[in-house]
Image (tube, rainbow, N blue to C red; front, side, top):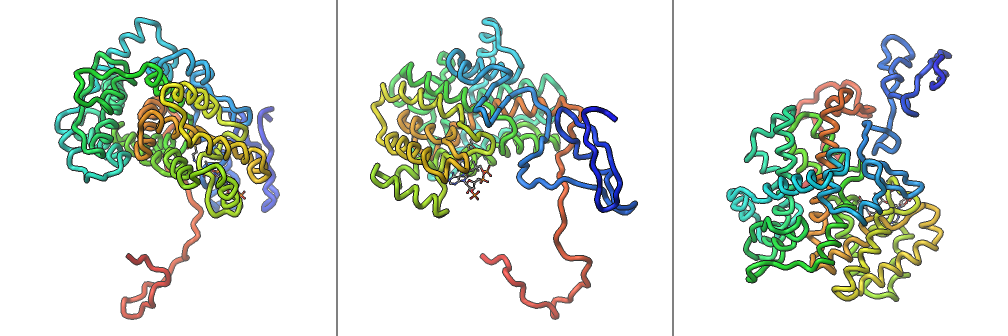
Amino acid sequence: MPEESLTITDNRTGASYTVPLFKGAVRAMDLRKIKTGPDDFGLMTYDPAFMNTASCQSAITFIDGDKGILRYRGYPIDVLAEKCTFLEVAYLILNGELPTEPELKEWTRKVTLHTMLHENTKQFMRGFHHDAHPMSMFISTIAALSTFYPAAHDIFSRESRDLQILRLIGKVPTIAAYAYRHSRGLPYVYPDNSLSYPENFMSMLWKMTEPKYEANPALARALDVLFILHADHEQNCSTNTMRAVGSSQADPYVSVAAAAAALSGPLHGGANEEVLRMLDEIGSLDRVPEHIKKVKAGEVKLMGFGHRVYKNYDPRARIIKKAADAVFEVTGRNPKLEIALELERIALQDDYFVKRRLYPNVDFYSGIIYQALGFTPEIFTVLFAIPRTVGWLAQWQELLGDSEQKIARPRQIYTGHDLREFVPIEAREKTPAAVTA
Ligand code: ACO
């Protein structure tokens, strides 16, 4: 009997099975042999919301949620945030190693060459309603890129894959900036390839009539650090979506669009927008206890708190708090910070939050910095999607190179009717709880 194994006794039949362990886990398919008889399908695992299921092997990001550890390719997030640029970290995440100086230069040059959008993409974006949500514009435009680059379907060509990856990383800031300008009724600003990745993004967002946009270096650096912190986070909801859609061999544009759609929800990347709304609603320090009361009564959630994996502290929140100081030195202190700090202070002492191990996550402070940088809440999730595109693409690449992966297709436990006799329309009864508009 292999040492790394489990012995399972099926109390229904008395039969005993040896199930090998694989890297500390049970392979769900090894349970299929546990049957009550030849007609039995075999044992499945039931895990709605993937609470305890590893869906892949990955060498990209390591998280220890209990210890509050996050590493990309083995490097601690705080070291990368302090010493690297976002494009340097993007190279690391995608290629597995930090770039040498010439490699970084070449990588930066290549990404920069792909910042322009086809003019028709611009026309396409112009068609959105004036008050369209920037995240919805972002998602739709990324999907539309698939129509501009049909060769992207050739996902097993390394050359084509590399090209699409460069295009996506180069173009996401341009699309994000165009979506933002559209929502403000401002003319689009073309990329300026003499600027760094964050500076160029800021130029496309905020350049008005001046011949060249000059970003404040401290603010550009803060934005770059925020990009680093958001670049990957292993198998979260949007990355799982990227892998699920990618597993059907869809092209990377529609796969990234689907991942971005998953990110847009308020329980995922949409949370930072919700945090700001919540802080606005609370409005002043004296109303914090009242809000905490509502949270504890189950009326609302404390947005920006809690995480599926981190049950100690989200290490990104700690770095963001530091970055906030650098930003506020330039912009002046955002009054919402006081409310956020008070919420955190009270929550961290309160039994409700302590018992449930609820701590501030990355979204709790990111919105406050984004606002200080000059962004409005509707664009916050787009700011998350720009760097996360790198993580999605790295995970997609890893998926395509993994011989164990197949189309993602979970099983279900069927709870519906057994076989029923067909009822002619004149004999049918009114459907209870039918979908009504
Ligand atoms: N406020 C109040 N109570 C909370 C919160 C919260 N933010 N988060 C969890 N809880 C409570 C739940 O009600 C539950 O309580 P119960 O045991 O009495 O039923 C308990 O804590 C456990 O929470 P779950 O919902 O089971 O935790 P799960 O891992 O499924 O959810 C999630 C994690 C979605 C992040 C959740 O904490 C949440 O909704 N937070 C607010 C939204 C948010 O900030 N999302 C951003 C996450 S980070 C990111 O995606 C980048």
